[in-house]
Image (cartoon, rainbow, N blue to C red; front, side, top):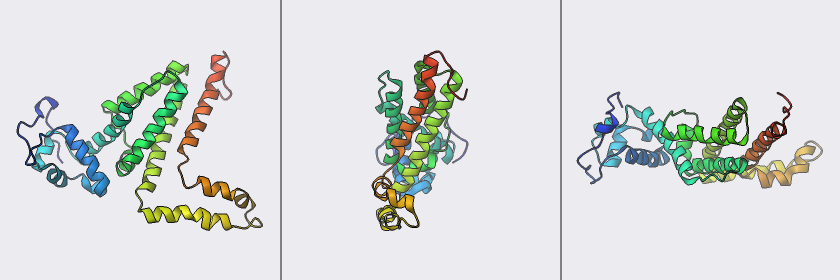
Amino acid sequence: MSERVVPAAARQRRRPTKQGVVLSEELIVETAMRLIEEHGADALSVRRLGRALGADPSSLYRYFRHADDLMLAVADELIGRTLRAWRPTGDWRADLRDLGLRMHAGALAHPRAAVLSAHRVTGRTYEIQAVETILGILRGAGFPDAEAVRVYHAFVDQALAYGALDSANTALPRAARDAEADVWRATYARLPATSHPHIAATARHLVASMRGSSYPAALDLLLTAAEARLAPRRAGTRPVGD
């Protein structure tokens, strides 16, 4: 794509596409997300998108400057889908836990898009809303500004990293996923205690745990650590390490 994007007020296509659909930024992003899940990063070409939309590929330049501009819009839409499904309760820890789990689930629902976009900073509507919301939760809980940013940074990076990690695993063929998961039973669970005492002692737990994501446990550990940092401040003292 090029740099010929049309201002938002002038973007509306007056005539429907060959498939009888009126183009919009939302429709293009939705179609791009579907194609990414089917074809990976190669889906973000004007020719492929044009065919899927039944539109002249050049018409996409009215909405996005180039493929990376569209990728940022896809990344922002993933954030938006999480925010639209999430409702705060006023309990900062419960709210962040629910938000984190929804972010992770949203990545797994669109694994290829999540892998491609997890490292991006969009500067768009939903990302800005997410940053404002999470910082508001933390500041409202009593975290000082610098600490709120520290926890925000760890929380978001953890959710995005696990989303990309687990999405990459989900995107593998089913046979490959099953074969890798079976390594814990077929290899680790059979290692002798004489040479690998710690693995042998915990083998049954490894087999049970390693097949699934550790994100919920990691999220709880992060929130527990954040809560431990907050408690002394609420008591009027400084946390250890300050």
